[in-house]
Image (cartoon, rainbow, N blue to C red; front, side, top):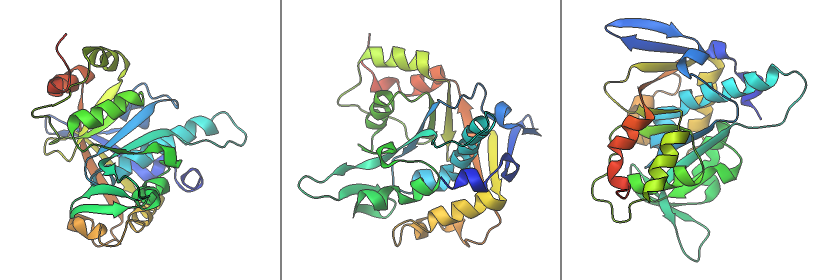
Length: 251
């Protein structure tokens, strides 16, 4: 593991915007009730979405995880239970996967799909999941992997759903989920800024993207920018599930 030896919470600033006021938060205030066994789901309908919108938050959570292990003393070998769900589909009979990107579908190997995420300590490879690029498909995968903290693109909302999930999935998710954050939103109230070593790791992660993928987001250029900032909108799990109500069968 590399980030546990390179990054500390001093590389992050968490800030809440409310009623035209700005308040700096601690890690525990930004992520209430955090536990090192939390299962965090990172929803990325297109290949680049999650990396461009979530890298700082992912590293901040990973650092919180390692802080918990460090507090116990001694050596450790472990990784946070972070799962990324990427839109695409397996190609029958070949080793590559058909992955949705901002520049159209591409055939990528599993290593090409997950290498940048692995650099953010979303690892091992079993934590990289290829899923249907629909809200219902992503929600079913998050449910199947028992996610209890979720990062979800704000504009990724369901329309008509061909195969809604059973109603018991709604009830179980409601009871299990601790928190949901919408990302890529205009009305975000929680900001995460990564600087110093954390910003270096993010740049290194983006350099591991397949050729051409990085150019899909000009906002991240030039790569020498000294910090990365992302904005999120925390929503209550019940409100999120109401937004996703079309993905579930009626009771």
